Length: 410
Ligand code: FAD
Image (cartoon, rainbow, N blue to C red; front, side, top):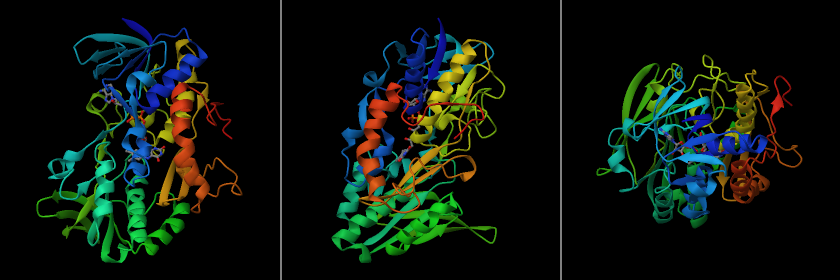
């Protein structure tokens, strides 16, 4: 079977792109390949970890988000052959495409931290990066009254680079409110060299690091967890020399290293880092003109976020339609991504930026100054963004994301 468009992955990016193409041309035959029965609004998991959302608010049946008119193939893609323009499915069958869109996200590599897979979900080890564990984060935070809480951030790239510290600030806010914060040592172990990748937002975040008396450990990378002993091991660089330090903990919130799925990393589509090698602006593959990628799977330097996928989907949709007509790309993407840093319950520092860390605020600063904590940004995150995701983005409505012609970015 040959489809006009095959989309691998029916997550935030894949569903939005399918809907966006069909809104423009309902006659295009599209197959979405994804074995998942559930579709998750992952940005909501930070709020699940703080008891603000229930887990169920972040989940729908995949069948309920699949756009009408799409053929949903409920299998994984296990091989991509861009020369034959064919995808091998989990049952061994093959489908062919005229245009391929790769949108299968990234893989959470829990196994890269020794002892972590078996430690998760018990003895105080948790992660908001899993649907089933985010509620455990909240339970741990509610129950902790004294001791040491560790929060870790792995090396880049990761999806939502702010999420490791979001979990920490919200936990601290809960401890502050219940009066136990002074009895809890909070440490943030970040494998990176800066608190946040875009310097403009760091001062506002540092105010919270100080307010919550967080011990900030930069270039400190979690490498092993022993849940039975309650010990985490970090590798730190001092003057270019690596050293390992052990820290006892009562609670450990882990964010795992993140890698490209093997089906991409081992395919001809991969760049050296394993992600799909696309042009940063048009999102078209650098070597295969009828292949596009977006979302976390794309080898682009933007912040890997659902907000990025919201802006990328219309760009890929119009460029894919152009490719079906044998034409070059017509729209480009400016690298927009957004990271709502939940510094306390009720306030957010709304980081919005594009390629090179260029600030790309969606609102004038008198309405919402993203460099400061604001209640408006919290309202946006808690009340507005979930319906914008489910009812807008996944249905191909391009709220503040209409694609612009190449070179005509606002
Ligand atoms: P996903 O949404 O992960 O979807 C990938 C899909 O591909 C899945 O359905 C999967 O089943 C499928 N798939 C995987 N392998 C295969 C295969 N071999 N064959 C076929 N299908 C396959 N973003 C924000 O914008 N704001 C936030 O505040 C925010 N906070 C976050 C907090 C947390 C804790 C987490 C985990 C993420 C957060 N994000 C946030 C990031 C955001 O959720 C992701 O960037 C976004 O979901 C990426 O969309 P995607 O479609 O590329 O990947």
